Length: 326
Image (cartoon, rainbow, N blue to C red):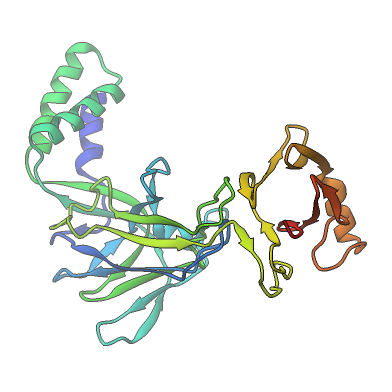
């Protein structure tokens, strides 16, 4: 009975059926650069329906920086939904072939995609996954896996439940930083040099949509992150103080050699912050510094008054620390 129930779940229960194979393509990624480390990225991703038929999609995707694929995959359309109230709260921007724009709210439903027949390594992987999940006797498991092999080795359907949008042929879904709240890679080690990174998106990594072509599902974008150490002379900005010739502003943890002096900063396990210049160090209570700043005891983003360390004047700010002329 368990075996029969399993196979019924595999082949039935859908509310709509996608007969033609869908074909989505990641067309473009735009990133405003250079970005500041740790800041929210100004990001746009464009995904187009290049097939001949309308397609319903959750836009399942994996997004990651450089070669780190540990983040896993998830449907991008879920970013437009408040799961606490189970309701779509944002509209997806849809761009037509003529450039006109509309908005579409995701709809919750079940969709079955037509899947191509599996063979070889792909089929074996599917059967191995099923074998691990089946709670049957050895005899029942053999029969269930044989029937599953017959089912998956032919063209079959896969039911998916979730939040979907519908893209007509040549329509493009635009995803931006309003929902894709990714941050520029956080450089822990301080550096005077800009760093380059790759941003990648892989559409439908599990192959749930059974697409006609998958070579167009992947796209990468090389972008630049600005230095984590600023060197004067620089004018004051909304985030950083003015820097005179020979002055530096360090925005990240780590150690660097600046004009022959070793400058380091690190967070301690007790929540304090240590800054050192040529091994002469000062420890700061981060909570106390923040309270002073919130109470307005210092201005211009300062958290503490200037202090001499290793012959260098050090001033702690909200976004880092300033080193006097070295």
